[in-house]
Image (cartoon, rainbow, N blue to C red; front, side, top):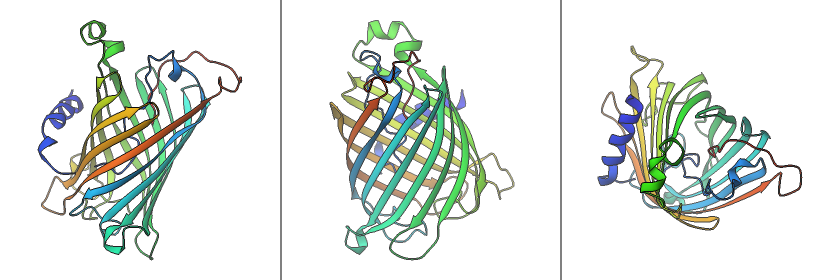
Length: 298
């Protein structure tokens, strides 16, 4: 119950703060799972492109060594189903620019490569990520981790919901992960410690027919160099409001990354972002249609 309590408190508390989200995975799905079972088809080639501007950024760094300030963000997410919903490969390619260096020239590249899948209400993920500077030599951060989460969806798991709120939905998940390989991925925003465990919680509240979505994300790390390796040392929280039309979305995000076990650097920003998705299923090309359970997009 603790992750769900944390999630509820998160959704209530951070609305007064400043901040957006660095990675694409927490973003709400652009697809409506009730639309003719579209998410029940295997994707041959799917993903999205997004671009955003950090409209207010007092402290969110533009490189892994915490230099500069992010100005622009561009990201490409690609995925393909290897076996139904049970095994999917995806990659995220994130690029950032430094507003203190002319805004346009890219300063950081974060590359992520992962295998993921879902069985019933349980999702799993194996992932490798490497964050590197582009415009100069400097610190690179890399890790590999595993993550397991459990999902709740009101429309499916709470039958009375559809009758009471036919145009709304609530989707949430929570879980934990282990950074089993970590040379220098840090446990706090000030680049101290080394991350060991990860705790996550996420919620999408569909305000109206998947066209207006309020969502939030909590991500916590622990420090393998600390005396207590299971206590969180960093909290990254996100809250966003997305408005979408067909395969496009405009969103405003708030993110804040802060230490929990000691005073230290807090990174935060506000950003406005545009995202456009695409999905070519195997059924679209006549390869065959499969019956699967609805599954979340990474």
